[in-house]
Amino acid sequence: MTGFEGLLPRPSSVRPTGESLITGAPVEPSVGFTDTLPAEGYRLTITQDGVQVEAADEAGAFYASQTLRQLHGADRFRAASIHSGPWTLPCGTVEDAPRFGWRGVLLDVARHFMPKYEVFRFIDQMAAHKLNVLHLHLTDDQGWRIEVPAYPRLTEVGSWRTGSWVGRQPDGTTEHDGRPHGGFYTTDDMRELVAYAKQRHVTIVPEVDVPGHSQAAIAAYPKLGNTDEQLSVLRNWGINPNILNVSDFAIEFFKTVLDHVVEIFDSPVICLGGDEVPTGQWKDSAAAAQRMAELGFTSEVQLHGWFVSRLAAHLAERGRRSLGWDEILDAGDLAEDAIIASWRGEEAGVTAASSGHDVVMCPEQHVYLDHRQAEHPDEPIPVGYLHTLEDVYRYEPIPSALAPEFHRHVLGAQAQVWTEHLDNPRRVDYATFPRLAAFAEVVWSSPDGRSYREFEARLVNHHLARLDAMGVEYRPLTGPHPWQTRPGVPGRIRTLPT
Image 1 (cartoon, helix red, strand yellow):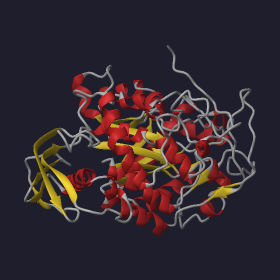
Image 2: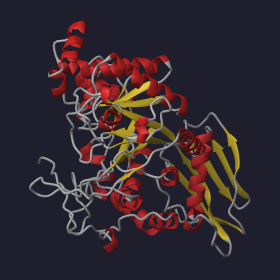
Image 3: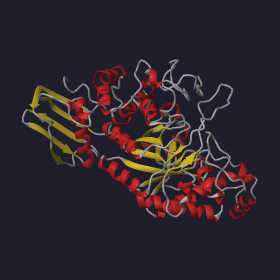
Image 4: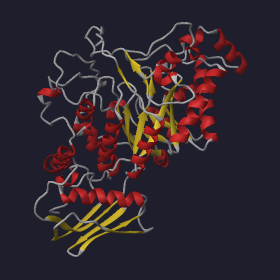
C-alpha cells in the first residue's frame, strides 16, 4: 500500500497498483457523480493518465479532494506553495464513505471569545479531517456572542466580563486574573461564518442555552431573572443558581432571539441547551408558583421541560429541529423529533435511542477535549478526566448497552472543546490536537480492524507534518513544549470510577 499508508481518517478501501503519477503541479481531478455510492462517499482513481473522482454528492467530491490533498504531501496544507520539483502521486483507487452522518465538534466561544478569523481556521482544520458539524456554543453565563438587533444590550453588556478564574486550588478556592475580555459576532460576521463553513461542507449548529447558563442575558436584561439583584456577567464556572424566569416576557424574548438565529443559520438543527438547571429560584418565586398552578404542575422540574418545549415548538414552526443536552430527558415534555446530546454518560443516549429519539453521543467520560490528556507533570491546567490520545481513538460511539434495532438513532458523535481554561487559540490548539485527528477516524472509519498502533504510525510518520504545515500548535506526544505549560496554575482533576 506504498503511498497510501498515511491517509487519515482511514479509508474504507484502497487498491494500489504500484505505479506513480508524476506531474509538475498539483493535480486537479475530473469529477463526476454517481448514485452507486453512499451519501458523502467517493471513489478516487489515480492513473498515469490523471485523476478521476466519482462522488455521491458535492460533499463526497470535497472529501475526495481532501484525500488527494493528503496524497500530495504536507506542503499542500500550507497557505502558499513552497514546493519545489515534481509532485508524485501513488496510482490506485480509494473508495470511501463515512460511518456516521454527524461528525461533530463543539467549540465554546462563550467562556472565551474566539475571533472570527480563528473560527475560520478551526473550520479549515475540521474540513481537513472530514468533520462536518460545528456546534457553536454562543451563549452562557460568561458571555453572549451573537448580535441580536432587537436586544442590543445582549452584546453591549453581555459580551464581556471583568475577569476569569485562574485554575482551581486544591482546597477549592480560586483566584481571578482581573483581565477584562470579551467580544461578539455581528449578524454579517455570522452569515460569513455560515457561508465559509458551507463551502467546506461543515454545518454550523448554533446554541442558545436556556433556561440555565443564562446569566449574561440576565445581566443585560434583568427582567429575565428571578430576583431584584442586578447581576453581572459571571466570572467563575460551574452550575449557577441564576436562571431565567418563566414569564411570558422571557418566552417571547427568546422566541425573538431564535427568530434571528433561524434567519442567519441554515442548519436544520438548533441547540437550546437545557443543561444544568437548578430550580431553587423557581421554588422561591411567586411567579413560578403561579405558572405551575396554571399548568397543573407538581414539580419545578416540569417548568424546565415546559420552558424548553415552548421554544422547541417555536423552532418547529420555522422548520427546524431542536437539540438539547440530556437533562431535557429528565425534564420531560419532549418534542418527538428532539435530538438528545448524551454528555453525562452513555445512559441517556441509550434511553433516548431506545424510546425513538435521535441522539448524538458526546459523553464527558470519553470525548471532552478540554479534559487533561496525560498524567505528565507539566500538563497545563489539568482538569477533568484523563483522555489520552489512545483513549479517544478507542472510543466507540454505539453504546454496548443499546439494542441493535435502535442503532439507527445514533446520528453520530461529537467531541467537545469547552474553553473555561482555554483562554486563547493556542490553548485551543493544544487541547484539541492531535486528539481530534483520532476522533475524526472514530466517526468516519469502520471499527473493523481498528488498531491504535497503526493509527499512531500514520499520525507520527505523516499526519503531524500536515498539522505543522497548517500551523496547528498541537500537543507533542511526548509532552508539552515549555511555552505550552502553565506553571503554578492548578487544575481540578477527576477520576473515573473503577
